[in-house]
Amino acid sequence: MRKLVLLAINAKYVHSALAVWILSDAVKRYASISHEVEVIEATIHQSDDEIARIIAAHKPDVVGISTYIWNGGKLQGLLTLLREHLPDAVFILGGPEASFNSDFWLESGADYVVHGEGEQKLPALLDQLATGKTQELLPKKTSQFVDPYSDQYISTLKGKLAYLETSRGCPFKCAFCLSGEDEVRFFPIEMAKQQLLRLSKTGVKTIKLVDRTFNCNPKRAYELLGYVISLDTNCCFHFEIAADLLNDETIALLETAQPGRIQFEAGLQSYHEPTLKAILRKTDLEKAEKNINAILKFGNIHVHVDLIAGLPYETLEIFKTSFNKAYNIGAHNLQLGFLKLLHGSVLRNEANERGIIYNETPPYEIISSPWLSQKDLAELKQTENALRQTYNKGRFLSTLNHVLSVLHLDPYDLFSMIGKAVANHGMPLEAYAEELYTCLCKIIEPDEILGYMICDWLGMVRGKNMPGFMRKPDTKRKAVIPIVEKILNRKICREEIAFLPSGKIIYVDVEDRDIVTGLYKVYNLDQ
Image 1 (spheres, one colour):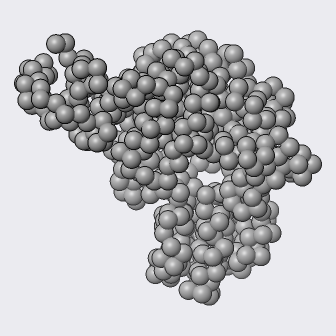
Image 2: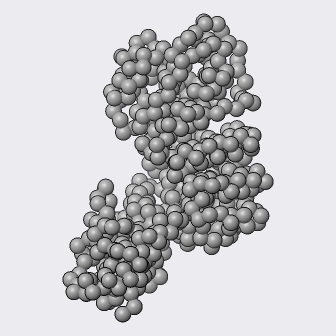
Image 3: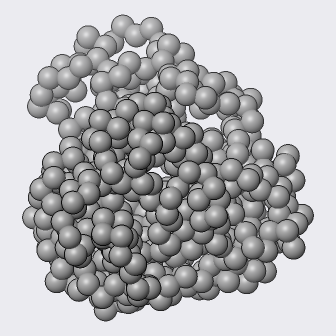
């Protein structure tokens, strides 16, 4: 018997790691001899020394590390420290960051790199290390299935995000992605249902399916979505979908979903046809928009749409068009990502030919290209910051809508202006609000913009005092509180009432929260 520690280094504490738990179960099922397995989950925010000491305390014979772009930059230093603590241990790396850059990691301290799927390969390698017997070349894919959702895994969730895989591979071959390397394989649908049910009973708030294009098989997607809708749970289930592949039957089903039960992330990436062709992306954008709009009208499903900045042939001006079109769909979240040149991806292999310059260290983000200069990308970063701190967090939505409608601005221009004026680096929300107000006062009459921001503040926070610039002297508060309490039929606190520059009085019902948008209902008090 050998002792194996499987290490996952997550990007955030709220994340959980699926791969190491899959491998843990695979070793127990498929290894020819018994191995003791421990799973350790750390985060990139822990020091290398702390992680090394935690691993060393288990005195493993073998350490397996799951590698991704978010932890790749941390692993070299960590491997060096682990070698010092565990000079006789064997170090095995797996995951996409190591799989497609194996020579580098073997030179950086790894003893072995497992390329691709590890359910059969890792147990066989462990057997070989324990017995010294050479194994035959293993098949690339496994036809057997494991169950990572052990009692031990469930006990580690404690409010974290839970992840679930019901298929592998992707039918599309996007040039920036690695998922299309393998054809799609679907796990048994009854197994998927059992795992959905079990996770829904753990108390986690969100279950994210890692299927790269969940609805590439419409009939199967319909059945699983129907099952999720039928569950007796308060969980939210997050799916990555191709919006243009949704059929009328599935859209009709989605209208029956409980508010907040389902969340969709729909990748658009770009509206520029030469760009889509260059990245081998096949999307019927007109149909995707039509389907997203239909879902948004239901008001029961939270929808994200994605764009990627830095793709071939998309200049800053062309990207602005993509941004404006995507924003005007009206999804709850517009995720603006930046091209990353992943090891093994088509675009990384073509980067020199295309003149794309990127960072050589993880996450390999674009620095410049023939279509976007470093200055352009800096502007896009500022714009993304403004978008993330306002619209994507459900902050100051009516304020933004008012500015856009009154001044007839393009959405990109507004967020670019905010991004340049308000450089948020972890500042408190109150300070950010005041800087946003100062920025918008340059283009809108101050009292007009203040009124909208006050309404937004009440609707987006609960029980939190307004910033000083929003508070005005009022003598009516004591008289107004009993009126509002009678309307709401309960006691309220002072933060639930506000006075606008126009003289109007508004109040918020903090017991009436939209589960999809996360916002509270704000009312005008008729005087």
